[in-house]
Length: 421
Image (cartoon, rainbow, N blue to C red; front, side, top):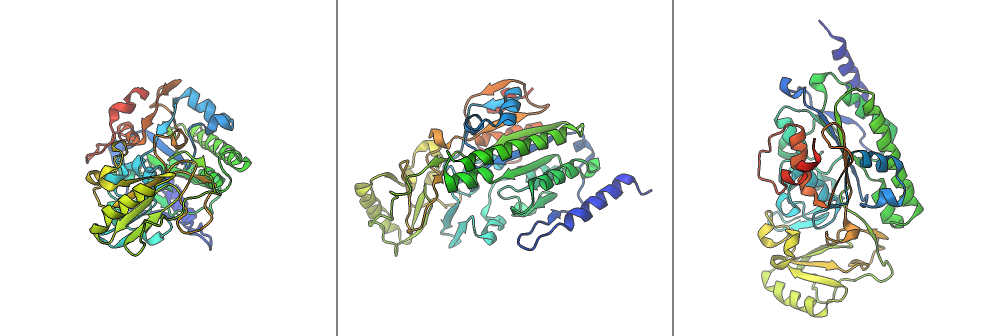
């Protein structure tokens, strides 16, 4: 007998596959042949939301009324500590793997791998989608292996076929789908037949990060972006409330943000011979990879002697608190020499205009601290927790969804156990 719920699923698939635009790939990808295992259908649901660059204090600073209200009613961290470097790709991937960047391999937004003789850059689509760059077991891979379906409306690694496993439902990253349509698709996912319904969903907002980079943290544009996310999350919450499902929300950011002195930037130091090093740099980090090891110490000594407005480290002597030394570097991707500027200065090695807002600096700085809120049936009410490292989110989510962690991670479930009912 052909059930109505099967027809609903077919119609859903037809609609989402037809959604395309010329400029960007907005087609939903669906992995056929998957279903929740019978025992997984009773598990709760969890939506992991990231608002890129949403510094720990932005909800208060710009009066994000819904986020202030819902976090006060649920769980709120005073702030959340990103991993070093406090950048988008390393931290998004740390959140969903429970690993430090040195252990999962995405050690910066851009870096060089000597063994591969290749660069990884966030703007290089081929590299970003290549699963061989990514270590660890992302939450969607963990869930799918244990027959619990997942979905992703963007996340670092979600379109990269890591370990040959994609979320059952996912989109390649694009910014062409309006927020109301994104929420409608989220609703469609949660209204699928139980055997086809995802229990773990990631959802990403880029808007605050975009505006902070362009206009700074104190701008009207950043304030408007905060309100956009506030209202969007409210719509998501109200939509889920109408479905009568046990949906949990975890709202995070990957890092904070600060304003740079864009008029007095730090150029490439004269001590660096560009013929002897591969170099990757952003405003907040610079990696020097020696083509010949004999050039490492002489260059380091010259940089150390002339350093002004920045710190310089050998890879085996970076601050221990960063977990970013040679001995931690599982994939050998941290530069032989690492440079980090002093705020409010930033690097500008190539003479280009640099962004007003920036991040990536020492992850203990107040300006780099991120946001963590959580609410739903799994979480305590009216509960505040102090600052904690973002690698601890992974074991908490695995616990809520009843997933068995298969490999060693850096996160520790005991850190966030106290926020659960």
